[in-house]
Image (cartoon, rainbow, N blue to C red; front, side, top):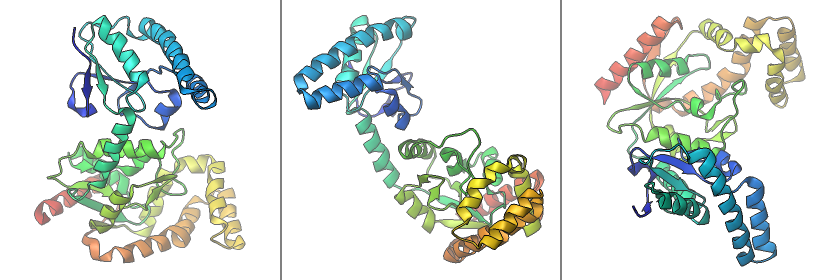
Length: 350
């Protein structure tokens, strides 16, 4: 029989199934990407054990916890693991590599499976994520910058199709990055899980080659870009997209057509504008929406809100802009041409 192996890094083992035995709430807040949640204690059971630990004593809490864990493991074996082959290799982790992960590991090891446990559990994983996200000096970031409606995300997608390394922060955050950016039917991840997804994506890249990403504010929806990553973005080289105003209006009308079909989705946007603009202007925008005058509405929002804010950003980063591309039309042909120009420029400048 193999002894249980205790590993420092979840990435060092091949052909392993990663099992998070923490409660569902702990798992939802953050977890190792690709892991599956098989709770040894439910949220309620974990809470009750914790109460006994504080209100009675640790010894009684351990007895209670062990009893619940034993009962739950019996059910898990029957429902989750009974059809696993003899070559199955689980890597188990809990909060800090303690009772929950050890209990399951001992049983699975006794059965004869090759079992690994992550030393230090989730806390160890989280520490590695934060430490590695702080180590950003080796990143060669190229920032795609342009006014709202310049098809920056489309260009990132095109670059990805051309096998370039692309970091789509808005995709990871499940948000398009503005007051109109909430993705329908999608919930933003927790801040911790956003950082985990960001870490997971970045460390897929080869740091000898550029990583392309869109110019963002430090906050995407409710989520914050980690400070060291944001600092690196702020000092990195930028590529400027110059797109005519009318073309940007047309592009936004196409990209956000769900808002024209469900006007109520614009209420949070207008509510967010109340403190920034006059009641007269807000009423005018509401009238445009009511009359389905969408082209005029989008133009108004660009002229009064997004373009002035962008101007501040362009001034701030003007010394970082090393290449400018004029795009007359935002169709697929020109988006792909722009992506190829970006790759050619990068190849010749690095």
